[in-house]
Image (cartoon, rainbow over all chains, first blue to last red):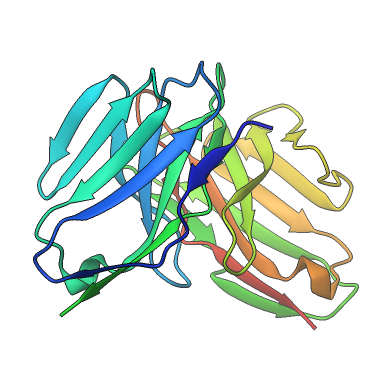
Length: 111
Length: 114
């Protein structure tokens, strides 16, 4: 079973700070990486996708991918209380459309 | 953007009965849809891959005769939980993707079996 590992948290940061979320994966042939945000009782919502090494920025969010280290991260700048949620890292199972999810990191942004 | 609609959003049923959950892609055609299950404080676990016009592919440990999947058109997949038991109570989420687009999720169905 291919695995995706995340620190379950909870991670607490003050409003306006940078929140850093990390994820490692075991399947070396994975090519697609995603970060989803899930509010309690709700379905996951796509935040970022990244496919190549390096950084990808979208507004306050930056995804970072290092395939050699099998590591993907998400940075949230200027964190807001509304960012408080569980963030799920998802990685495609090599050669297929299936996504394997981590258990998620719960983020709390304190006003 | 792509939208995936799931219905119902919640359902309560008695043990032994069957429940059908619908998943629709509203503005794109999805040849493949995925069904996930999420228990409290757990991650999403893939149950099966639904392929339009063919049999679904089930993940290891998922009973195909209990969780019936039908993908009759390019925009609709259904999951039927047959002879439901309290241990089937969970959050069921479908997802779909169009060509060259990431996976999008439906709003999920909270199933409670009493």
